[in-house]
Figure (tube, rainbow, N blue to C red):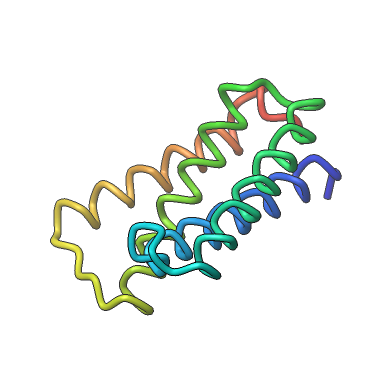
Length: 111
């Protein structure tokens, strides 16, 4: 696997951690979750910047945000007990389909 994909996967993971901590920070009223938000987002943006050395910004951002949305929806369900209705689930499925199209068919997403 090319190193820029490793950076992108780590960027998505740290963004997911940061967003989960954002929920846990209770609007930045809890100190440690708030610190984790700042650190995780900072690391995520750094890793995303490393990815940009090999991939176009539009593709990187689409993959980073799309995967992050799906991961946060799963964490919201499993950890925070948040439910999604059918249109939300279908929309998430379309995001996954879009990511697959970019990865499988686009020459812009380097392999």
